[in-house]
Image (cartoon, rainbow, N blue to C red):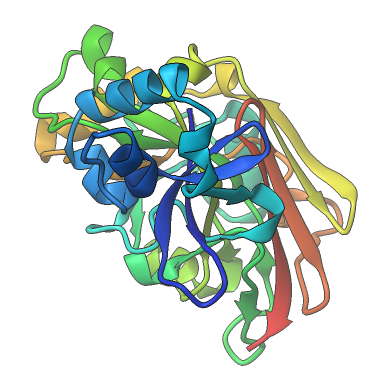
Length: 302
């Protein structure tokens, strides 16, 4: 199931389901089928497994007439970030691919040793933007604006001290996050200023539910800047996989429905290239994750 937050014309943001070239308004579709369904992504996630089950059942048996007043062609809507305003900071995972550890050690003075535990930082909700929204480049703050394509996990159930082998049961779905980083804004080893600036968390274009993704540990990730490939990796090379990350974080703090974990990036970031490459106004960056789609954002002058 491919779920989006969308806007049609000047109307407020709504929860949509992408199917058969249509964007189906979930709340209106539910109302037409006699089922109460919410109009926002977070409210839908809060309902737990019953919500996607009810929606899928309605879609399977729906008379086409039910769709007439509850959908518009996908091309006629604007997709926003799937969760435009997360309730909490996004959990970011650093140095989670072997080759990225090596390139970071060469260019960013991080340790060349593989992490023994997940390296965790955060990005505030104010950093989130959607597919097509501009990433702001403030030349007075950074001269090293970089890309990082990442698989992002969306939590579906409250998770405390979760066992690794049960961790995927707590996942609602997956999306893409481009972990935009101002490499010259790190402070005494801390990353939140580098990674948490406004517009530095492009997200989308959709959340694909966990049942449709299946195994999250064999998904191809690529990044293109101005059409040129920069990253090409696979989630099977994560040092700490999704199970590990959920188990580790939930051991020390509660994960709640709607929480987001950006799982790290493979090699090929701009800072790790020789010579180094960074993004500037006029550039366009595209992050693609298999089974989810492509997240595309232009860079503009702040």
